[in-house]
Amino acid sequence: MTGPSPGPVLETARLILRVPRAEDFDRYAEMQADPEASRYIGGVLSRPEAWRKFLQSPGAWVVQGFAMFAVVERASGLWLGNAGPWQPEGWPGTEVGWAFHRGAWGRGHAFEAAVAAIDWSFAALGWSEVIHSIQPGNVRSQALAARLGSRNRGPGRLPAPHENVPIEIWGQTREEWFARRAQLDAISA
Image (cartoon, rainbow, N blue to C red; front, side, top):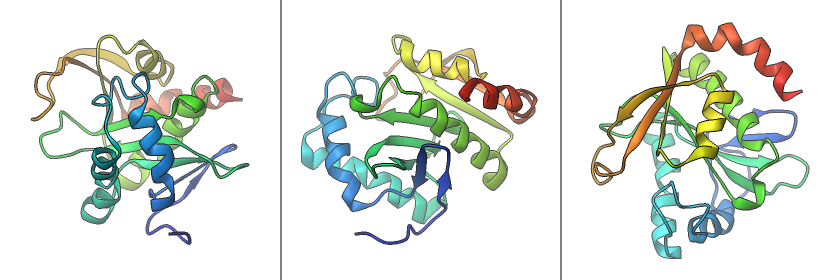
């Protein structure tokens, strides 16, 4: 399925953030099959399990009007990961989360995508804060949350079927975000 996305398209210097499409699935399935890349997003999934999970984001776009964006490299068109607003039933807050294919790690893509997604969430959704639900051992996501200006607010709880997964809630208010926003542009330059 190619063609225009049925939702917003955000562009950054190196990335396009858009609603997920069927052609993104092969790379998504690779990410979900990689033990290290999937470690903190529910663990390894078979291809059929990954397909069902993949459909959650486009479905949320239709039902809620927002969800994780597919993050695509502008220069190559390569799917890199997901980043964006996420708030399923019973979620502990208005989250902007991320998950990236291991081939995209270490190049600043998650930071660039998260900044665009947070900006969009505050502007389009009118959220008063963003959180990030991060497992205590996920030091890469903790470092990204801190770089974005979020602070560890302490333990949180996800709804079933993830109620036994230990998480910490990282977050910041809309006011805190915009007070630091100009500094973030300087960091990413």
